[in-house]
Amino acid sequence: MKFDIVTIFPSMIEAGLGEGVVSRGVERGLLNVAVHDLRRWTTDRHRTVDDVPYGGGPGMVMKAEPLMRAVSEIRETRGTPDSVVVLSPQGRTFTQAEAERLGRLEHIVLLCGRYEGMDERVRDMVATEEISIGDYVLSGGEMAALVVVDAVSRLVPGVVGDERSVAEDSFARGLLDHPHYTRPVEFAGRKVPDVLLSGHHADVRRWRKRTALERTLERRPDLIEHAALDEEDRELLDEIMKERKP
Ligand code: JD8
Image 1 (cartoon, rainbow, N blue to C red):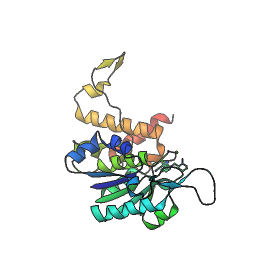
Image 2: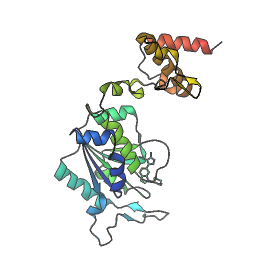
Image 3: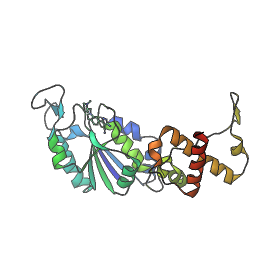
Image 4: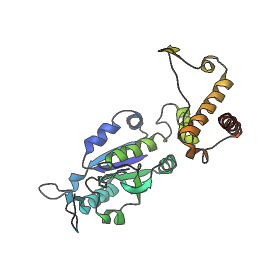
């Protein structure tokens, strides 16, 4: 899986991807991530990437030419990408399903804007999609690009050390995660639930399913209707509902 990220703050991306799962994926040859400084495609003495908005108003707009030249050169040197993504608050909201879709692609270009955003002609001419990571205002696309690269990378086989973690990831099943505990068995007067110490694997499995369902019902009831529930989940859900009603 190949990513090209275009930004005026390359060190921000490098810092974000330099540790953890993505950097391990790069070391293992499973991921190829190239970060490009947009100013490389400027032609003036001041390496200008922004300009005043037509029609007036506050703030600056990212100029189209450097972004277009960046995408052209990336096409020529790194191959034609499957997708050119603009990160912006106007994009479609990024979800685990979107991460899975992007994970099936070979090569993705991510364009990070700053200021008030990009000249609309960049979208019209080179972007194939526009993604937002959620309904809050960031100062630029870099953090969003890091989120997308992280979420997509961990779906590439071998990037996450233990494949079971990926399969069990909460959103892979569409539910929130169950609680986790590690040593010591008692901390600040709080004990680890007995079932986790019992050695009864079937009981542990059922407890985890149950607590995952309880938490989802409590905190994110909206997730339940799209979750991949099996027969046992439905039984547990029934139990939980009955206990809550009376
Ligand atoms: C790209 C510039 C800032 C946005 C004026 C402050 C994504 N989920 C998300 N929230 N915010 C962004 C995002 C924000 C960006 C840029 C992405 C480029 N800004 C602008 C419009 C209003 N400011 C994002 N993905």
